[in-house]
Length: 194
Image (cartoon, rainbow, N blue to C red; front, side, top):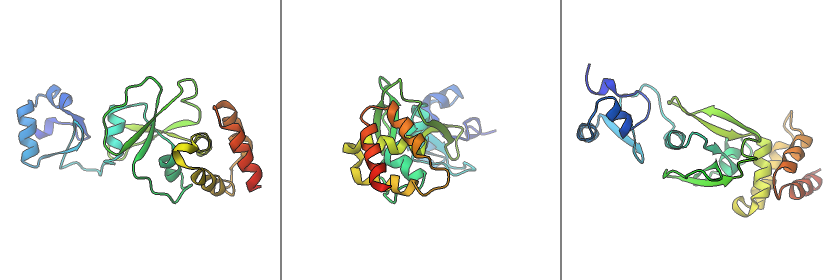
């Protein structure tokens, strides 16, 4: 059994490598030899990994277990926008330290409302998961944070969501009532599009 075999098959940190018995010097030697690759700040992966890894989400999911896809990134995941985000929008509960992760735009959401409409999805090729807001919560967030996303994106998402089977404007308004600065713009947009 070689030194690489004692390392996890999923992305890991230098601390996890050290806990597995790989010194920092050996870790860098494995990087230089092309046996390992750096996939994020302080995050590594074996080059013989069996499964493709979502290189965008894996570092964030590893460093911030409560990270939740939100705003334009969640809209894209739900197929509610044609906009391709330049970065990944991730929310954390207010008061949480934002880890240093490339290509992520962090947003801090109120602790009391953070879990409204939140579920989790697996991160491809890892044992990690990342949170994601429901389509309804995401649309409401886009309206209440329209200074961040732009009003046009919120309208586009609502327009794409309304004709879907199972879309329920009442559920959208219920979420809007629970979040600050959301109820009036969501209600106005629903009236406009109806």
